[in-house]
Image 1 (cartoon, rainbow, N blue to C red):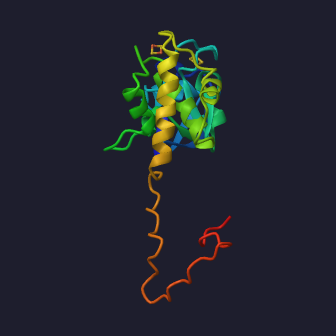
Image 2: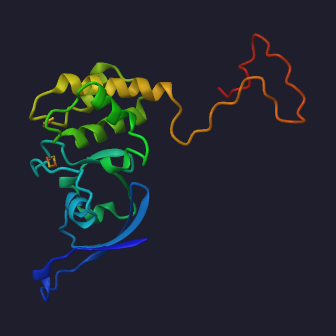
Amino acid sequence: MTVVYEDHEDDAGTGIPVRRIRFTINGQKKIAEVEPRLLLAHLIRRGLGLTGTHMGCDTTNCGACTVLVDGRPVKSCTMLAVQADGREISTVEGLATASELHPLQEGFKEEHGLQCGFCTPGMMMAAKALLDENPDPTEEDVRWALSGNLCRCTGYQNIVKSVLWAADKLRAVPARGDDPPEPPDSPARGDTPAAPPTSQANNGQEG
Ligand code: FES
Ligand code: FES
C-alpha cells in the first residue's frame, strides 16, 4: 500500500483537519490523508500524478474529468476525495495493459475519434461504463451515454464510431483474463464422453 500526502507548504499551523481514506485506483490499493475540501480530480492529478484525467471546466459541464467510481462514470471535479473512501476508482491510465491498448483506445485510433485529445480520456471512461453494462449498444445508446461529455473540437461523429468499433471488438474477443472457451468435445482425461445432446438439451450450458 502507498501513502499519498497533499503537499501544501503554506498549511503549517493552520489546523486544517485531514481525513485518512483508503481506496483502490486502477487495481492498486492506496491510503491518502486529505483535506475534506479536496476534490477527487485533484487527488487523482496532483496526489497520484495520474494526469490523464483532465479538467476542462471545474463546474460539471464538460466531462473531461470523468472517471469510474465503483464502475459508474463520475465527474471527478464535483466529487470530494473523502467520498472515494472505500471505493474503487478507474482512470484512463488503467485501460491499457503494458503490451496492449484497450479496444476503446484502438477504436479512437482506428476511427480518428480525437482531434486535440483533451476530451478523450473522459469520453473513453464514459464509454467504458456504457460498454461494461451494454456490450451491444446502438448509435443512440452511445450518443446518450456520452451526452454529458463535451468535445470542443466538435468531432462527435468519429467519437461515436470509435465507441461502436470498440463494442464490436470487445464482442469478438474474450475479455482479458477470461479462459479460452473449452472445445465442445474435449472431455477431461478419464471422463466418460458425454452423450450427444438431444434437440431439447442446451448443450450443457446454464440458461
Ligand atoms: Fe469536471 Fe469539466 S472538469 S466536468
Ligand atoms: Fe479536442 Fe475533443 S478532441 S476537445
